Image (cartoon, helix red, strand yellow):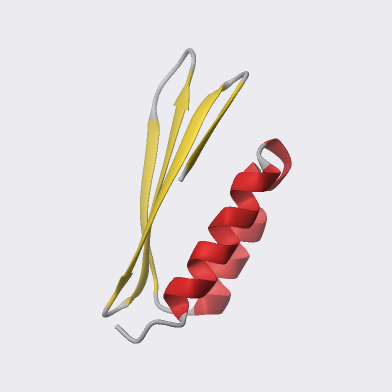
Length: 79
């Protein structure tokens, strides 16, 4: 899932794994350095704290809601 804005683009990739939820977050500014984060959350609450602290919720609210929905679906899958 991804979104584009005036400052650039942001992409998320989510995957349910044995250890929990694997998340990649890539930010691609129109100018500047591309940033990629790879995270593994073993607890749903840890993921939720990370997600609610991400400024994406203000910049791309629809992407933020999609991230929440997709993560909830994946957390419910037994890995």
